[in-house]
Length: 426
Image (cartoon, rainbow, N blue to C red; front, side):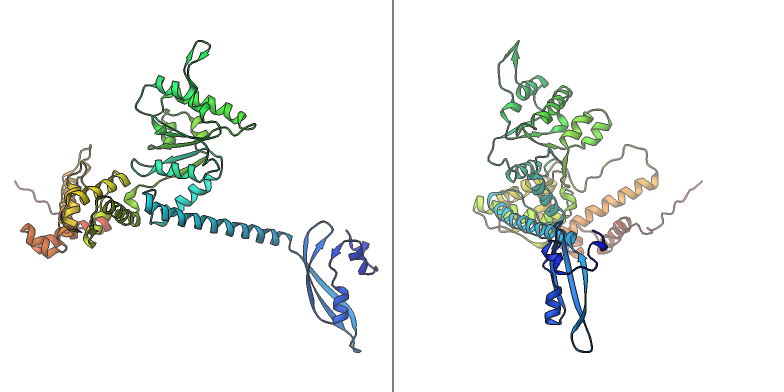
């Protein structure tokens, strides 16, 4: 309303007509002091009003000046912030409970901030109905994370179904997912029909046959319409491979990819999560000590060796290694030598180089040989505990160890390496 609507009128009319409530003018006049109040306007907005009295020489109030600030948006932001903080507290409480339960029943365990954020994301997405795609290398825990999304969803008390691709012929998957038919008759109820109202987990999505991709894409289009009238099916998928890359090379349907990856979660490989390597190793050790009645522990060098391994098999490989050590090694202390012995017996060695399929120059071959040699010596130092002990055990000199390890450090830090001088004769 314009100022003309109020000029010259009794201030009390503002309150009587409902323009502002409460009015502070008369309180300022009667107290002769500054007053502040949160007022509500006729339109429902919140206004912070601060009024001061101007006194005459006789000590009476001559004028009242009131400054009003619209705080509606500020109050709304504060309310949203309070809601967000309350939600964060709930998340933190659930995360603490999940951590506590994980140490008891062997479910997901994490120690790094990176995995903490990923679990938080999974719990947020779990409360939605969005189709969720979980990607990550083999053995990284995709199935456990899919189960976590289900457990914290609104459908946790509903039916859960699971199907994995890659083993059976396409016709078997078609019959299981969409039901088998004999002419006009249905011989079996489809898995997608049985999962209505519940959750269906599709594992190894990257191995889904093309024909199934096409039929599932059509089913998803119809499902979008059905879910407007009912609960439908909550889909959670897992994949070892990057489906975006498979879409690019034409081996996965683009429309199906976008329908199944509305809420994506990517699990990073274990090799880049040093805090998780040590934490998981102790977690598994505690579990297997309890299982086999053992009392084993890692020394510092053993944990050091574990964190330097590349872990191509991710969490699954680490779990297997710890169990193998617990059941096969004597004594209580687990040393770096024991760890290295088990690592060396696996199919993939950390020190095994990736042999290039391209032609290399003499200098490139020499550099790779030196790097490989330095890695072998570093492993011996880890096992022995010092360069001096490693030199005594291998029969090499301390200076040889230091010189060859200095080469590896130079390669890793990309600093200037000793020049190789080539001489030619004749």
